[in-house]
Length: 217
Image (cartoon, helix red, strand yellow):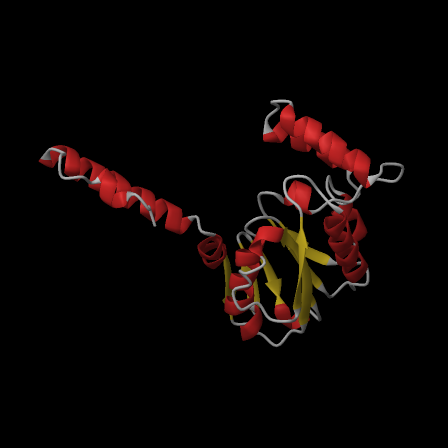
C-alpha cells in the first residue's frame, strides 16, 4: 500500500527507530484501508432483513418501489460499486442510476452493472459532459414517486463533477469563476460556499427537486 515502505524501513535504522517506524507505518496502512471508499460503504451501510441502514437512517425496503442512484466525485465509482455488490444485488427492488466521475477513471469500472450509467466529466474545472450527466440525473429522479428511494453518492471533486449553472450563467462563466477560485488561495470550504450559489444542483437545489421522494445521502 505504501510504495516506499522498504526504503522507510532501511537497515541503517537503530532497532528502536526501526520498531517505532514500523509501528507507525502499520497504523497508517490500517487507517488508509479503513478510509477506502468501499470500506466506508461496508462500515456505514448495511442490510438487515428488508431494512436498509444508512448510518443513523433506516429504510423499509418492503415499502420502497424503485431505487435511484445518483452522484459524482473522485470516490463515487468505488462507493457505488461497493453499494451495488453488497446491497443492491441482494434485494429485489428494481434500481437504476447515473453517476459522474473523472475522465481518468475510464478503465476502472470495477464490475459495475449496466443498470448504473457512468458519465465521464472534467475535474477540477467543469465541462459540458458534467452538465449533461447532471441533467440526466435530474431528469431521472424528477420522475420518482413518494415510495421511491433516491440515494446520492457525492465525494471529493463533486463540486466540479456535478456542474449545473444557474439560469443566466453560462458554462463558460462557471468555468472562468471556478478557475479564478482555484487560483485565489481560498480554502475549499470558501470556494464551495461560492460554488453552491452558482449551481442549480448544489446548495439544496437537488433536495428541492426530489422533495416528493425519500432520499438518503
